[in-house]
Amino acid sequence: MLDYEKYLRYRTFPVPWCPGCGIGMIFKAVAMTFSKLEWEPNDIAVVSGIGCSGRLSTYFNTNSLHTTHGRALTFATGVKLSNPDKHVVVFSGDGDALAIGGNHFIHACRRNLNMKMVVINNNIYGMTGGQVSPTTPTGFISTTTPYGNTEPHFNTVELAKAAGATYVARETVNRPRQLLKVLEKAFKHTGFAVVEVISNCHINLGRRNKLKHPIPMLDWINQQTIPIAKAKDMSEDELELKYVVGEFVHRHRPDYFEVYENKVVKKAKGE
Ligand SMILES: Cc1ncc(C[n+]2csc(CCOP(=O)(O)OP(=O)(O)O)c2C)c(N)n1
Image (cartoon, rainbow, N blue to C red; front, side, top):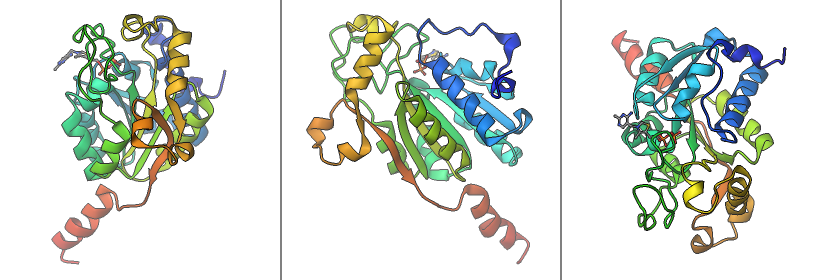
């Protein structure tokens, strides 16, 4: 048995993702990170919304909560507040996290509750067949933008930074070693940690944009990927449509529990 297998709930297999989907790779990277940190399955709560990414909670052999679309963070907040000792890990697609769940996302960043969030950004509403999402690149064709997306796309990292997240990183499914590194740092972080992973949906995004097989789609992601150190010398225009990868924020700010203990509990007790 491989060391991460105890985190896989085999009785719920097979997994539902299309052949070549990047979610499987993220699934394994997270299971390997649990193993590296030696977290016990019963000490972990995996919470997810609805979508292809949202299916993940079913396949982890941990406490699992598969919630409603866009509301994973709200359920996760309740789980963490009532079970402060559990490691709460949230999975959301880009639609789940940034469209219907966008409001919860900014407030979770602001609140700094000690939870981890993995945003699986495949740039499209995958599960429902390929509607435009807040991260669909401008110009890309989707079922709801048949002449190309006219809207500017969200930058998840900039949004998380501006809203106050205390750990923010971005990686892609093409960079598994770097992904493992940031997952480990995010999971060890005390506070709200966001890791965005750029993933491929060749079926519902790629096939409408001349990237209908996994390899060309992964090549396209590679071409858009710029390490953070290199991005520093590039202009805003040059970085348009690029995925800058690396660690963007890693700082200490008292997390929600620490603030609550000091500012509320102690006052209430008259200390
Ligand atoms: C309240 C509500 N609105 C809409 C839906 C339909 N719906 C299910 S999944 C989804 C979008 C999935 O896209 P994303 O969150 O990016 O995840 P992915 O499938 O790409 O991983 C939508 C709109 C729903 N289930 N519930």
